[in-house]
Length: 167
Image (tube, rainbow, N blue to C red; front, side, top):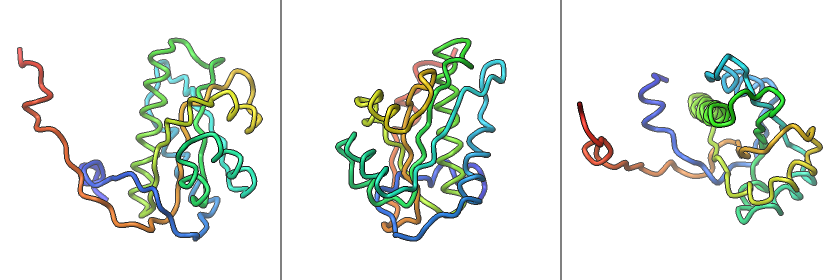
């Protein structure tokens, strides 16, 4: 898939088929995520791959979007490793780039995903549930699977509305 087309056609997918996603596919997604830029190349992201149905059920209880997590074949929790951090704002921006790479890779592979941020209201509970080191801070959970819904048509504001000025 051509890059500009991938950017334009990627959509959040919230319903998945029950088909499993193999480890090789998940590893490729995480490899592409890890190619995101980061300040000083510190690569501050860490991941927890969640497949276990009981663990997904407990994870789902931490968000109002529980059905998405329960029905996704796999969820990827994305963390900021604070011990690798050198500038919090830049490192959080790097995590955003990592998430975008992940979503674009998933889309290019013919899969679907949604980035769940609302779960951050229970960040500490999720970190404990997933057993991550204290230095890791939850940034998002990405639900991944084969789409069970058609991609909706996307819209964006006209460029004229988002450009403040040309100097």
